[in-house]
Amino acid sequence: MASRALTSIALSAVTLLGGCSAFRNYDSELAQTNQQLASGNVDAALTLLEKNNTSKDKDLLYYFEKGELLRAKGDLSGSQNAWSSADQVVGKWEDSVKLDTGKYLAQFGSFVVNDKVRRYEGYDYEKVMLTTQMALNLLAVNDFDGARMSIKKTHEREAVIADLRDKEYLKSEEEAEKEGVKTQYKDLQGYPVASLDAPEVVSLKNSYQSAFSHYLAGFVYEALGEKDLAAPGYRKAAELRPNTPLLEQALVNLDKPGGKNDDSDILIVVQSGLAPSRDSIRIPLPLPISNQLVITPLSFPIIKADTSTATLSQIGVDGQQLNLTQLNSTTAMSRRALRDDMPGIILRTTVRAVTKGVAQKQINETNPLAGLAVGISSAVLEGADTRTWRTLPDYTQVVRLRLKKGEHQVTLPNAVGGSVVKVTVDQRYQVISLRAVGNQVFASGLAAQVIPKANPTAMASLKP
Image 1 (cartoon, helix red, strand yellow):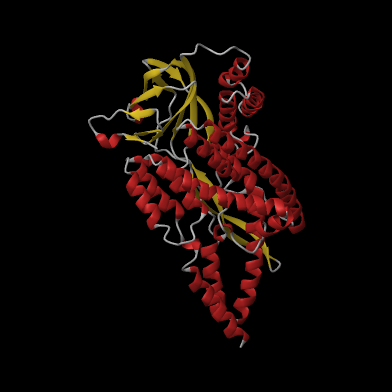
Image 2: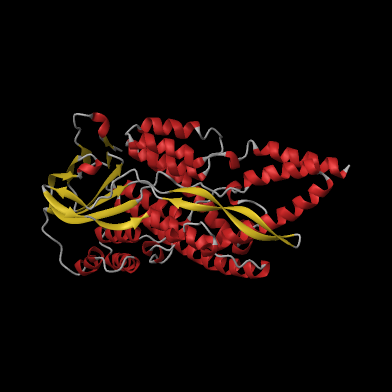
């Protein structure tokens, strides 16, 4: 009787997995979506997104991706609505963390459930970049007060994340010692360790604080006349990305008198490329199962950088070539997040594999069919979690300059289509946002318009 029950349970588990998110190939879905985005066919990208998300209960990633695609289409209001839904999901996560951090860590650190079938809660850098992108939407329509609210939320979110991660890493170390797991990612033979130990990854203070987010905060506070708040923003940006003249100069300029009334302080933000994807790699590890060392292939996540868009170094403004200053790399932040998470991933994966290995050996001895079913379900479930916000821009670069009010031309390199953007300057402080994906250029907001070329599909313009 017990044997038949075990068989029934195991086979039912395999059947149920057919409708489980474990079978969803998110990377493949978004590769197709981003291919449409890079070709300028944003409507097709949105159609694919909806096709792949038919459930009424939309998850966080759906709102992440939809907000970025609607921004590319020119629907800034729709983009902001989608991201507001995402922000509510993240807000509930924050509430659960603040209400009982210990309970949250116990649930998330469970050894039983594979990461890929958990509810997606977003990586820390995604949570912070969400409110940063929302601020850019608002600045595209000159809503500095609204952007200020998004920036304030960004700072509060960083504080919640910082407190949680300190406790999580300590708990992970304690659990690893308790379980006797000493494996580190550097011990994984065949794993691309160099990608996690690259200078641009190791030099980051953490995975979620962005020099761009804090510099943008400084610019918004300065525009609103709150220099006492602008200074900490610029200072934090300089701390996160030291030896960057743009950041150092921002602090110096705060004490200088303003320019002529007909001059405007312009921040041109150029976001290019796409966030990296995550893939799963299998590494054989010797595990102690029933008093024997068994070589067991385990799955771990790796980061694959996007190569759809050429790296930009300059843009032209009224015929003058100006250097771009890079303030953010989503690829570097993603790798830093994985680098910091790997001890916990290794711990959970190892303990789960040992536990299942012992259980499967016992089932095999009493009911081989049930053991086979459990083995199949385990093989499916044990792939690494490959979900991540894929339409998020990779590099964020800026140019800050003073321009007279009126019309100006911004030109981008031939590598991204050689686009020309007409910019209308009519505010004392103004933010111009551009996005490059493949050879497509999107300009967001009221003041920027991409000038069409002979091939209209090579350009796109965002309008609110």
